[in-house]
Image (cartoon, rainbow, N blue to C red; front, side):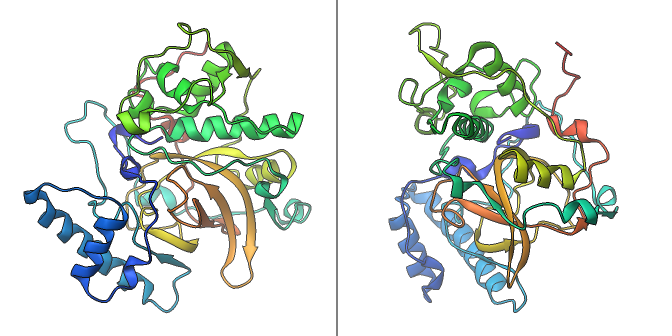
Length: 351
């Protein structure tokens, strides 16, 4: 949910360009100049000094983190390094609710006997059910990317054909009248509304309804009915897994297929590689981003993890993916009020 709960995420600042390892350049000014060149930045005169200071602050954070002896992941310079974290929409009319540290201290044991029946590792990329990583760029359409990509995966599992489905179709046409996770389109939504739309109207191919909102920064008018675009994908329903049931997620990934998932991405922006430690009890939890969960595994040195496909381009993370630490029990992330994850200011109608 890229604009969940009134938040405009830094995923708006994506780029298709690839930079060299800027963080390894000793001279800070030289590192900034290389960043500007590599990511094709163009600042106004008064803005340049401010952006340089932000970049240097984040560069020092990257170097400080990477110097820690026991860290399980590395940070790196990317398209977000000249942005202040978190970047929130000011004066938003949407009243979002957050979850504090106290709600995340319950520890639930896993059912180890059932766990033993599951595969040790699952990576749906190996079955060709996962397409190329894409970049949403200047639009908060992560919810549409995760949704279109997951439905494409299930089309492949059914037909052995992996289509590229239209993210623009969802971004422009799937309405969000209840402001769930945002006001719709580039300003955020939730996957439930996307699933409902596709079940009614279907989803077009990317080639028939190409993605442009990343460049225009607007949701764009829905032209689906006007140009009589043919639809390829249609669903009869969807499943919401039980709340706070990690075993159900593991079972689904092992025996069924990939999932869409909502996450707190506030610590993801400078991630480069390794297994990110997702628990931080010192910070408020805000579910603000939609991703595709494509597997799980166990690194021989770093331990167990979830495998997540993001929509921030191939130059972010591990070629567009992040490995998130997977605990043997629910150490954190236990949600006492899972309904708040929809980010809706009012209850959704039942029909």
